Structures are given as structure tokens and as C-alpha cells.
Length: 322
View 1 (cartoon, rainbow, N blue to C red):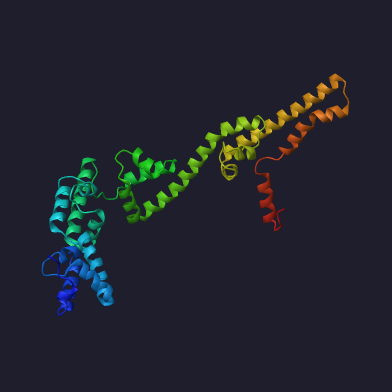
View 2 (view 1 turned 180 degrees about the vertical axis):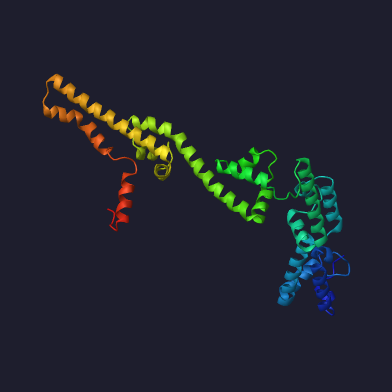
């Protein structure tokens, strides 16, 4: 038996079209609507859409709204199933991985449009955080404690990061509690900020001194600080110059290594001159043999930071650097 097509609904075509648009926009599928006996076939609806631009526009909007409702439409049974899994101890992500659960995008839409659903999820998450805090021996809301605040400042000032200080101090609060303390107490905020600057300087000096032993051995063997930075096996050139400027102990050790390097080069040059004289050669041979070493000695005569110091001095006097 043939299905009814467009000619069967010619008299009430507009009413049928409005009914189709309304039902599709409410979330029903077009195929489901057209499958009913008293409705036109899917082929007839497609013919109407091609023949009438207004109906086609209405159908496009209705199909888009229907897809949105089918995907994001509020389903109380499915929402209650998600809440039941969360109440049983599962995380929200784990609850959404269960068979038949809504997608994460759907739940995000529900949380934005259903206040009761969002409040219940928030309440369950808050209770779980409180239980975790009680299990760890820490109160959910911890008032400001001057004793622990001072110990945290001292630990940070000695070179530890804030996370390391909280792990090192027994009974210290969590990082979120410390953040709240910083907002509530101005003196603690300023003291911790100053301690962080001092601690960062201490960590920089400790790192510089940890590199000093390796750099000193290579400099005494004839390398330059610039060449070590360019080799990729040491910190960058700007880092080494900054250590030379800010860390007195590092600068002292590097300059002492440079002096030792100069003395070794000079001893090498003197040894070459003595060997040439013992062999009976003249001044030309002496200059030829010692030229690589004198060139290296002249190139390494200036100490690290000489060029930067010269440029800074000229700028300070108002001159123009070369």
C-alpha cells in the first residue's frame, strides 16, 4: 500500500507543516513523526522543503532545536542516577563513564541550567573535601596562626619554596589555607613576599656554588667562561654573568680560577722559551713556538664581565658604547 504524499494533505498542508515543525522542535525525530499513519511520508516533507523556502527555514531551525533538546534536554531519571553514583563515592568523571550516563557536555549544560542539580553536586563535593581534610588531620577552615606563619616565613627565607616549606614544617596548613592567610593578614603577606625574595636569592647562590667546582676545573685547564656557556654543557651566558654580578662567592672562585689559568699559561710560555734556548734556536723559532700560547694568554687576559663593566661605565658617564 502506497503512503500518502503531498497531494493527500493539500487542503490542510499548512496545518500539517506547522504540526511537524512543532513536534520536531519539541525533540521528536523527523523520521518518527513521518512514520505515523496520519502524517505525510518523509519523501513528501522533503518535497515541501524544496518547494517552500519558508518551510525549509522553519524545519532547519526545528531540527537544530530538536537535536539540542535530545542532547541537552533535562532528564530527571538520568540526573538522579548520576547523583546516586556520586553519593556512593564515585567521582563525577567516573559516574559519567557508566553505561547510559549522559555525556560530560550534557552535564555541564545541566549544571548551568538546573540550579538544584548544580547545588547537589557542589554539596557532595564539599562534603568529600571535608572528609578528606578530616582524614588528613587538617581542619576544613583553619584560622590564622602566628606560630606556623612565622615558621613558614623562616623556612622560605632560608631557600625553600613555599611547597617545600609546607612539607618541611610539621603541622603546617595546606597551600589554600596559606593563600587565605595572605589575603587576611597584611603583615604575613608582606613578610612572606620578602622571604620569597630572600629565598630566591639564596637558591640562586646555592645553584651558582654548585656549578662553581665544575667551572673552576675547566677554567684552570684553559677554557673561558664564554666558551663554557656556548658549549651547552653549562648555564647560559646571561646566567653566568648574573652570577658573577650578584654572587660574591661565585665571583671570587671564578676570578681565582682565571688567575690560576693565567699563571699556567705564563709557565707554559716560559717553559717553551727555555726549551728553545737549550736547543740553540734563535728568536724567530722562539716566537713561532710560543705564538699560540701568547695569543691565548692575551685573549684570556680580561676577566669575565670586563666587557659588560666597560659598557656600563661608559653609559654611566654619558658616553656611547662601541
